[in-house]
Image (cartoon, rainbow, N blue to C red; front, side):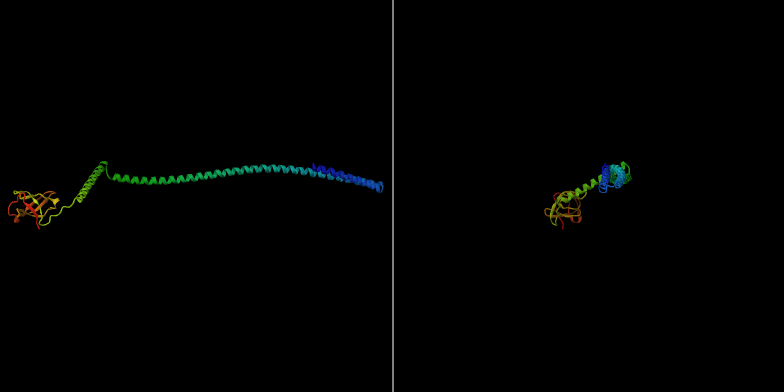
Length: 258
């Protein structure tokens, strides 16, 4: 539209220029020939201007077509940009999903490793259990195992009883060993048939097997005895014949020999 206005203005200017030339030519020279020449020149100029106008209109039309083409290309570029932006958004969303999938895969891998460790531990426990079962089967039948356990219980009970007895004995004060010349006790009884005397003192008084005692009566020596057996409170003693002059009696004193 703008180019059409320009073309029309140039055509009018050319016509006016031609007319002015004719006018001035006629006014100055008054020559008709000059006027005709001027007319011819004006017509030629008008024709040239018309040709220029046609070219301008053609150029204007080409420019309009180029503008329409550019508009189409711009619209296509706009659409392509929108599609590219949509693709980018889709890719970004896919990247986020890929990151989430990767994290889930890592978690699954960690769980699988944990399950593998647990399975290995279970396999080790199973192997140990097999060994325990084999060892148990090697012990024998149930009745044999029970018998052995009962025997073990008895052994442990006996050991505990002996240990307690030893501890109790250790707690008891040790009897004082009779010193030589000390009066220990007396003869509780004497068996003339079998020839042994029962003393009223025993191991708890320090008397032990093998001890030798003098036997006195009213301060006089009547014999000697040797301890054959020592119980806690009594002892059995046999007279030594070469030192015993007469049968022993109950109440005779016993004195530790040197």
